[in-house]
Image (cartoon, rainbow, N blue to C red; front, side):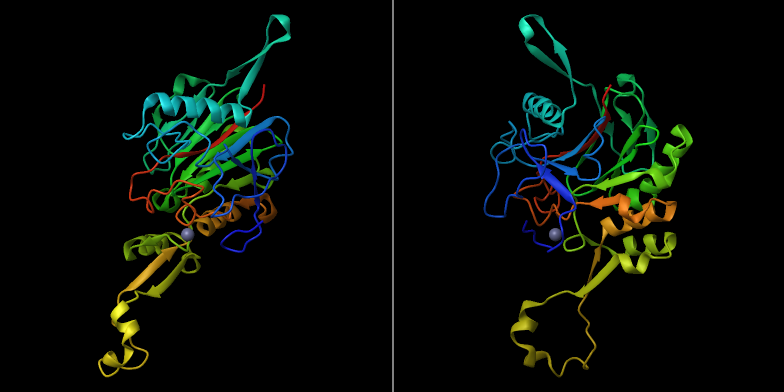
Length: 324
Ligand SMILES: [Zn+2]
């Protein structure tokens, strides 16, 4: 399976009707099918429904053909988003089968619970759809027949599952939520509500913007440094390239002392590692954390990226639920 980072794909990409993995669409072979990314370590629980949506296989026209936009954005039609959500739930298996006369099976999608996401550390416990449209950035439940969804287009969607207590959660982690320790607090809330022990938790970090592309300001680095002892290893710096200097280095030879650059630095944040560190810090075992190797900004053929598409893009969904 080729992928641009050369990493072993820890998360499987599965498509219509397939139980296991299938080939990742390459950068040149864009798949128009509805593909869902699933974590291999979560696929073994028959009572669990989970997955991360991708770009294709939907009904939206606002972001290229057949886009599976799952968020009510201003550019897209409400009808298209509703059809996309229904298709996503069906493909995920978040449906109740009702046997009708003449042995015709009819499937009813589960209620979908989403949040008005505000880059906070607010985590909502839900056990019915009555709590729908709350503000916050994390959802947890132990109630069967509900699908919890977090919408993203660069931020990380993170799923936590406690197989012992049959409890689940999904969280929205951009840099703000990460500084506020949303993943760490998610594990804490699951402990408080369900008695989940961190060593039992399984985590799946879905696709988001990676360290290759996630340029941030010095202020962001300062906030991480004030919060985390391991902050230094989350950032990478490069000197900003200057095409004129690169093309005619001799012109500038006398202007700078060797080894000294007055060019501004670019700072990149590794959000996946930041969240992995939080999960490890609370006691989630390393082998229980899977992360997608796909960067949204590198792979707009397959995913939505708010940054790469300058704000005009769709929303993906990380979703989790418990079968009844
Ligand atoms: Zn990238």
